[in-house]
Amino acid sequence: MATLTRTDIAVIGGGLSASAVIAELVDRLPPSTTIGVVAPKGRRGRGVAYGTTDDRHLLNVPAGRMSLFSTDPDHFVRWLRQKAAGYGPHDFVPRRIYGDYVRDSLASAIRRTGNRSAVSFFDAEATGFAATDEGGYPFRLSNGDVVAGQSAVLCVGGAPAGLPLPAGAVDPAVADRLVADPWKADWIGAIEPDATVLFVGTGLTMIDQLVSLVGRGHRGPIHAMSRRGLLPHPHREPRPPAVALDLDPARDGLAAALSELRRAAGRIDDWRALMDGLRPSTQRLWDGLAPAQRRQFMRHLLPYWNAHRHRVAPAVNAEVEALRRTGRVHIRAGWLESITDAGGRARVSFRPRGTHGLETLTADVVVNCCGPDRCPSLQSSPLLVDLAARGVVTPDPTGLGIAVDRDSAVIAADGRRLRGLYAVGPLTAGTFWEITAVPEIRAQAAGVADNLARRYAN
Image (cartoon, rainbow, N blue to C red; front, side, top):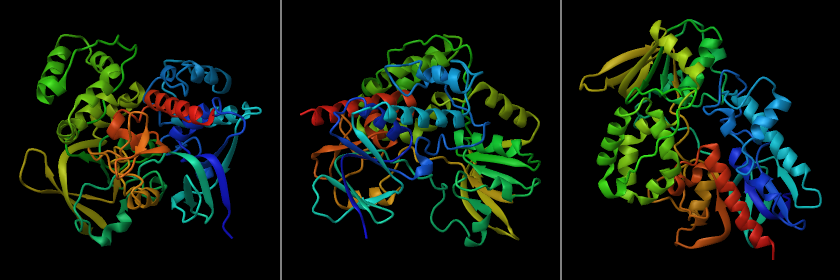
């Protein structure tokens, strides 16, 4: 028989965004309130990004900028001194360790609540709204139970982006040669060490999979392909001082803003200073763009933004560049056309960038490294599909996640701001854009916690 549990605030999800929200809530809510957290036990505090067990997978930001709390910027560094000696504020720490830190911080926040709000965990996934007479937000769980929150916070992550191919372009006969989600299977352990590997995508996910593959002794040819063949740039340490630049793409247009950015980069020693100087004003710039300009940015400039903005640790970059110099790894720019069977292998047809003809590459395994959706679409989980069908959520006008206001409150299909329903993290990228990094997520989580605390203070 299904169990119904009532709670004041239901937090849906268990990764970084959810952990940040819970850690902020328990320090603000009165003792009479309850928090119910719906997330499979293994994902709590980790999600995909910090669920890796491979210590070759490093943070892409130095430890000194990765505190879970805006009001305590040295929190992670102090934790490292106690739990992972040998790392300092300028180190690029293994993501596994950061996952330990998030889980530890969440557990500590719950333990220190004393006589404040009680936190309960539900080892399941939310799959949709339940058909009950409960008010608020009753969520149906994958185990058949129901958690009904008077308020709720959606911290739903995105599914992996699919291969950039039209329907029917992949021969079903090569299904066992394709790795749709490299984080869900030990595909490396299942292939021969001399196998030919093709990574589709050349961003951060590919970098992670590449260093794991080579680190486990792979000897065969490795190819990586994306439409532009762009790799993430490395950080440079010591970090150059940020240089502010007065840009107004909403007024001058994206092309003019890009030209000015390029001219400014030519006047300084390191373009990274400009990218870091843009960070405080990124949200203002995004807010100023009309929907058509945002779509133009996504269509033409996003790959370049990602390569320059989301950089990799210097040590990881050095390893990748060494593999390229020795011919172990080949980076290609082109458009996939089809994947067909070639006697038990995968024949990949593609059009090299700048040409009109087709070429083929035969691989033993094709690995989808397109990464997660830039933000979750409404089709990325059964929960979002159900909420959209009920009109509870609606797509952001740019197609980036769901519509929310500046307080992160969910906007329903009829345009209403839903009382007590919030979203945090990548699901809100249409409004907040740079909402995949820790500094932005922790600030958003604190804001949502403030709003909920005011509601329950009365």
